[in-house]
Amino acid sequence: MTTKLRYVGLDVHAETIAVAVAEADGEVRGLGVIPNRPESIGRLMRKLGPAERLRACYEAGPCGYVLYWQLTRLGVRCEVVAPTLIPTKAGDRVKTDRRDAERLARCYRAGDLTAVWVPDAATEALRDLVRAREAAKQDQLRARHRLGKFLLRHGRQPPDGMKTWTRRHRDWLATVRFEALAQQATLVDYRHEVDHAGDRIVRLEGAIDQAVAAAPAALRTVIAALQTLRGIRQVGAVTIVSEVGTLRRFAHPRQLMGYSGPVPREHSSGSAIRRGRSPRRAMPTSGGS
Image 1: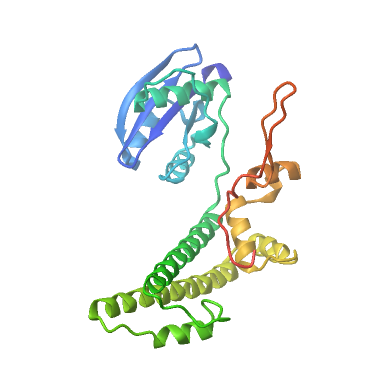
Image 2 (image 1 turned 120 degrees about the horizontal axis):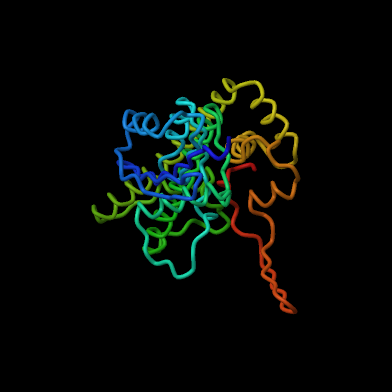
């Protein structure tokens, strides 16, 4: 019976978890703080009662889905909720771990929380790899900017008509020299960082090829289907699959567009109509997407 359910709010941190429980009769109470360790979590769940009576939730964050999988293995129904969609009271300026846990338990019992999609092991592995490549692309861009600005500061510019970061441009970079040992050492270090970032991207894209080949058949089918769309190559398709997850979880294309970010903004009231541009994409960018 739903009247016997206990709703558990977990405010999760790297080392600790603040715990609160919302009873079916309306009582919401904090249970203190436990270590963020599997054995401590297991003892807590056994203490709270039969697993089928428990409903647990915590905010999506840097701790990932480890706690979700652990509670699921214990037979406890768990949901990971979107932090930005948790209701807050106007004027509430006191924030503690205990109060956060109590608010999670109270809102979860009321049905006011929005759960996020939890990827399976294969999709999460692809997501980690795609994000590693995205980090390498960002590092490459920063390394190129540092080298370019350093050369510009000293009046070393490529010949007219030469496109940057082409093979000709790289050959030209290899000919640049400085008389001062300090500046030459700086140039060599900046060039090394650019080359290192490029090698990382090549290595990670090779790992993506291997990961796709070893992925479950269902994932490979979706990745292949996405590449039939104009402008989407393998890296772009893998990015979409790993970040969005299964497309069937969206009942309508509008939901998919709202999730991925290209829906324009609107804030209208009465006769005042204000529309804005689409927000920044939620998914990482990728070459060839």
